[in-house]
Amino acid sequence: MNSTAPTGSRPFNLYLGFGVPLLIMAVLLIADPTALDFALEKLAYSPGDGFIGKHSYWLEDILHDRAKQAIILIGLLTIVSFIASLAFKRLHHLRRPLGYMVMALALSTSFVTPLKALTGVHCPWSLTEFGGTEIYTPLLSERAPTEKPGRCWPGGHATAGFAWFALFFVLRDRRPKLAKAALIFTLTLGTVFSVGRMLQGAHFFSHNLWTALFCWIISLGSYCIVLYRPAAATKQPLGAPFQSSTNTATE
Picture 1 (cartoon, rainbow, N blue to C red):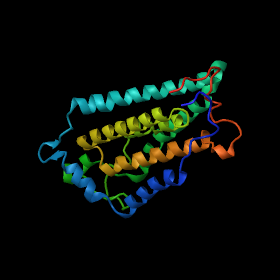
Picture 2: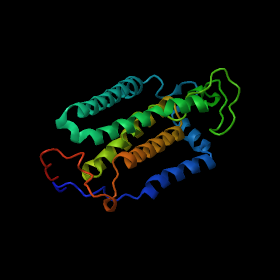
Picture 3: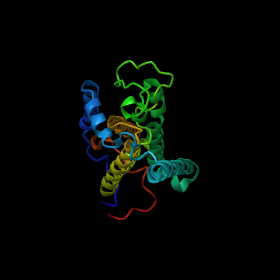
Picture 4: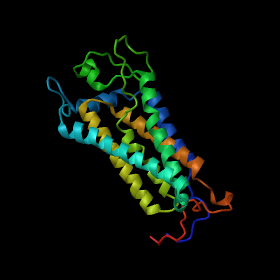
């Protein structure tokens, strides 16, 4: 990577960037994923014993509780860093990328709770098919009568992983190789968190897939608003907010 700042953002096909996840969302709504969800979840369930990860110390205490705490801490450090970039002149070049990170992470982690309350979808462990007492209903169907509405769509813990799509977008114009590594890291982390909760009976596969799609669209949308500058439409380099008083070394 050159030490000079780029004249704009690297080429990015926004039609594909937004279109593919929106198409997948449409498919999920039109072609009910119930059969796939149940088939995958039954692999983690043993009648009489329950879900294989129900009492797992590793899945609950480490991969869920401690991992979530670590992600929250990193998010708080990002907010503190953004505030510092506003207060200290020597950090001013980081205002835009840090502002983007705060915006993308905040939006990616704030949509889950309202949607859970709005949809009332139950977790697998609450359903009669998996030893619970609640009747399963697809996402767009009317909920069966219950005294305890579900709070399981979309997947919550998965956002702690997939929200970091923001790392890919904040790096893609200045550190392409590192951006690819960040994308792989995010996909891996989100998948691990998702599978862990599926093994515990907390979510179906589609719940977590929806989370990944939402997080990608939010991160990309925030990138378009804050960082994306098509080369032909800008006179000043996109790298200006990133650029410090000394040039960065070539990767």
